[in-house]
Amino acid sequence: MRLHTREWGAGERTALLVHGMAVDSRTFNRLAAELVRRGYRVLAVDLRGHGRSPRGYYSPAALAADVAETVPAGVDLALGHSYGTVVLSLAAPRLAPRRVVYAEPYWNVVGEELPQVAADYLADAAAAPGERWTAQDVRDHEAARACWDPRTLLDLRRFDTPATPDPSAAPVLVQFAERSGYSAALDESDLRARGFEVHTVPDAGHNLHVDNLPATAASLDRWLGPAEPPGAAAGGGQAVGPKAAR
Image 1 (cartoon, rainbow, N blue to C red):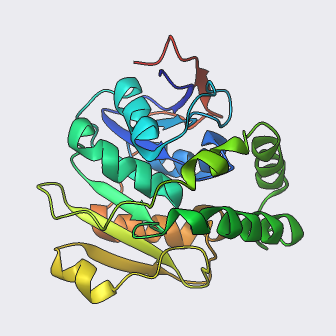
Image 2 (cartoon, rainbow, N blue to C red):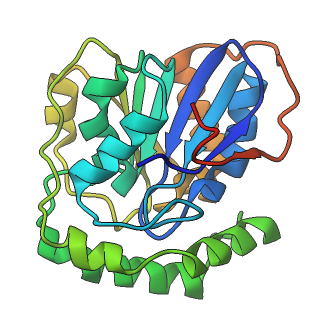
């Protein structure tokens, strides 16, 4: 399945962003602008059942196959958030990204737990958006939830999420939010033993790239190296339809 894709910038390097459950590519509007300022062309997909992408049968493997079909292999940076880490870790062998970021990873989780975790998260997010959320962040979150297919939870609850990925040739950064209650309980020493770098983003909840964008960007900078001069204006994100995405 070809996915609806948003695109920002025109840098020589390409970054891919993969969102989590019940949101869509709009969640990355401000993070994408930061990456554009660091010299990236940024692509963010709407997973099937989310945003403007088609609906269908939902399984982790199907979601991962969609991303691999939509996005060219060899992106310079791939970042997945929450359930997007599940999708990205399964798609990574085909995508062959040069660097990988897993933000608030959701590995080693029993599928039956997913609906309750998602319900708790959605209730909390609706009741109390982060204090750093802009009015546009709130509108984007509400709009994404309105066009999300809740049947994703009914299908995905049949599947346990994959185990922590094995080390690969691509360097890996794992980001945890200081105040998160929605990522999987993972052993940070095990992650480091696999060769992964691990950062905790301070003063942020599960949506760390929205809750505390400056600290999230600073974490990326420490790992990626100094930001390059901007190559293009960030803009507001150009929507690329499923047939136009390459």
